[in-house]
Image 1 (tube, one colour):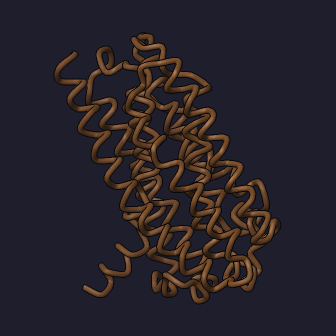
Image 2: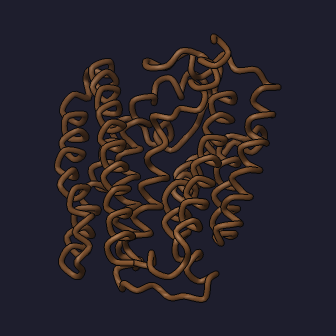
Length: 295
């Protein structure tokens, strides 16, 4: 039972909504549920989720030392052997499911960036800018584009003009701002552990300013998304932008108390996870409803 708890902890299931939400937004934006068989979307979605879990397990093992200094996490007890077995098994199965669904490039790219983020000797997590780039590709850009590749692989075209660079930009900006909350929460622990990522390189103040700029940019792009299309499923995310912006504003107002910032951002990150779960469930139901009613 203890071993199972260790494994489930390493999977970080509570942090998986990001990749699922990106994939579901890709489906809803292009409106292509009508052409490829539904099993292709289900297969690819499950494959991407398994790859995400594999990446988190590898990250959990690679960050053992750093996690000892984190406010919200105790060091992982997962062994190197268990990590190797689970990462290789989940990655292989995830690739197989993604290839079966028709999203070969997006599935392979998601795996590549997910592993490069944590794999020893490369460890993009420890490299400023590249850490955000790898996260953006593995959890937002490629999963979002996967439904388009599925449709193309079955000889179809999107039935809906909503899929666009503008929508993807909004999704990337907003989710990056949310992820920055978790990164700022761990900035002291990362610094002490020698992890020189983007937030450590920027420092607390500039990271908070960067987060505020991301929130402002996502608001402007989100306004354009809602104005130019009928993609009403973006509205819940759009309404969350003022909340995200207020979190960074609070941090800027409390710069003299680092402990207060870290505790507040830890609470905000937990609330964000619950919000992400709710959004994932809602989008799943909307996508299922669209598939059944309008097929």
